[in-house]
Image (cartoon, rainbow, N blue to C red; front, side):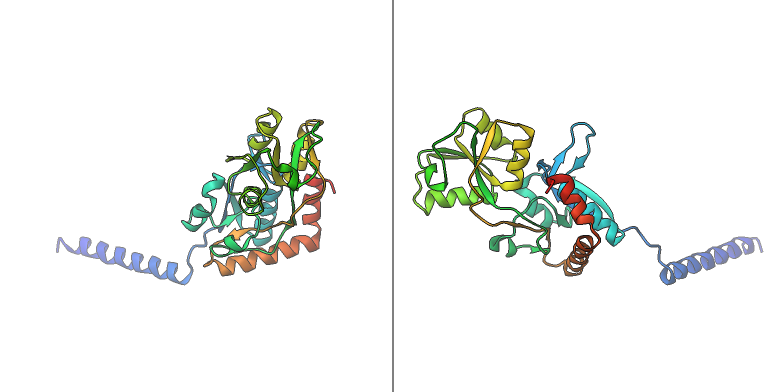
Length: 259
């Protein structure tokens, strides 16, 4: 008889547990979806650290926040090294790369890209007083500075190794702003870089640099996702299309590029 209260309590407890499990199966708790974005925040105006606010900002990141809003998803930004940005995506550290990444056939072998969201060509940048460089062929005998593993790096390497342009040296940096400092300090004769990035550097340092002629390539940037994330890719593309239709994309473009 002394065991009845204990047995009764155990039975009641078991009923409660079963009821709770059944409730969770029928009505599972919904967790907020998070869109985790990887970027190398050293590529203004696309992604950079705002020195005044300490916040990660830029065209790409604000575009991703707008995409998240369209999808009803929270957006979390991770600042990572450019050199390891694709391996980080593939290992699951984030599910989208938004980092001024040019769509190339080589990259398409390992990741999926969204529809292109901006066009940007490569240009040659020199110091403002330079008169001897008027195009790629004039880079013979010159020292170049580029961002490592960027399309500027690939183009400079192709000029040197395949096109027979006698470039003396190609110095490679992790951050997109560093080649410009190398140029400014006289340790390089030219930089090969994406046009919008070059324009941002000229705006930040008036009278220091100049762009030589027109862009000599056509570049399209895309958001990179894992090959397995096909449903997320569809959602991202739909959100991009909506932002271009409702005017939000144009608003962000005007904010960062003023064109």
